[in-house]
Length: 418
Image (cartoon, rainbow, N blue to C red; front, side, top):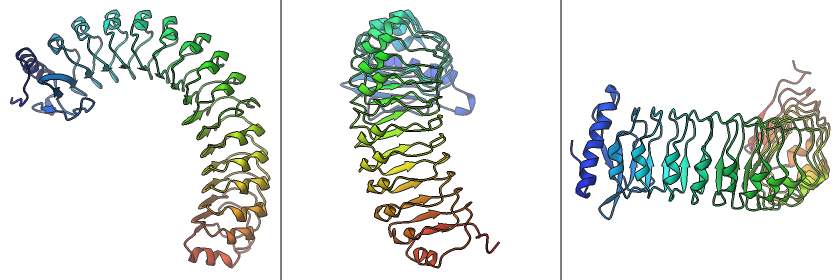
């Protein structure tokens, strides 16, 4: 086996031993494993071993999906290692010798079979990122809080039903992934994560959120979808830094707090689909940076007039609700390109829709239209218009006109012709 790298003698010897170990444990169909010289310390090798070398020392090792059931003690010879990636193996535990890798900054253990994290892990005091998604963890050690430099913790898709109290004292944490676990509650102490910018707590069993979640003043991304929430705390409206997205989909909400959208002027994406909402707060119009709004699969009977204030809104999805009419003001959302109104109870569109100068996709399937609103002829930006599954009596002659200018029209045969 040829390895074209320059390393200290101890590391070169360890690399040869490591290559032999990986070869011995690799599936037979994998053939001879390769040692790949990585061009970046965060790069990965998809077969065999990847190594990143800088200043004649190994800074990164990648052994993803190598079929390993254990790791060799020779890894501890790479004393300057900053990144170690053993994602996608069959590891049930970690050797104590890894405790010697005290310069590690990022450790990737995703998609293994770890049931617990060793106590010695807390000695990796330079660790910035710990990735343990898709394992079999039932708990995290209290000693995890000793990782005082940890900025990212990924423990999604495990079987965690509670988190250690010490976790909420880790003030350096910026990114926390705890989704896809059977967590029933988040504690009030979550407010202590003062530097948190991203929180992913989706697909748990949460029935309520703590008031102190509103103290996460730097939070710009929040995913609490796919839980069992029946109400949201008023304090959620204090999260003025929310920017990238707010997911509240697939819960059991029948209403949203009036104060929820009072102080989120930077929010770009909002998803409250698959709840039981009947109304929306007027304050939704204060989300002046909103670009995409998803409201489908609720029980909405009307939309607030304030939607017209959303001048940056590009997409509005309101399928599978109970809308019988739309507000005239919606046409003031002049950036709207996609409007999905499938499966509601609409019989007409506001005349003001003619001012939707950027509307390209309009889906009116499954409503109660008996005739096609003439204003659609005047929306010259339309590229796709879906009229299927209505009760249309006749198709107007101008349908051919808008098709000629490049609009694809989907329609069922009118009742008068069927």
